[in-house]
Length: 128
Image (tube, rainbow, N blue to C red; front, side):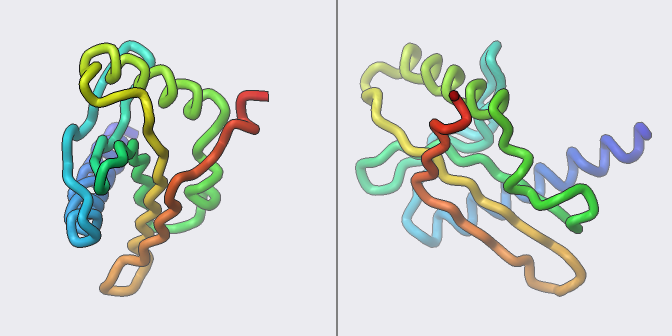
């Protein structure tokens, strides 16, 4: 089990680096990587034009445990909102407006990973 955890961490770190490169090509600028708070972590905080973007990166090798999109639960969404509130407390010059992007990277068996990029995701229904 320990090896599995290390493998998942390595895969996740690779996915975040891949995501940074992918998003940089789209004009995003990296502000923070793995922004930790007592509420949880934001994988990437980036800027796209004048918009602050929290990016949740999900890297999967297979769909054995379900599709990656389903891993963003009510608890995870609330933690991301709370973590961004902390970010704004520490960076008041950034302003309170932000959007959530979800980047799914599926490595599968092909040599080129498949990327699914959901921009400005609205998940407030998870707060109900």
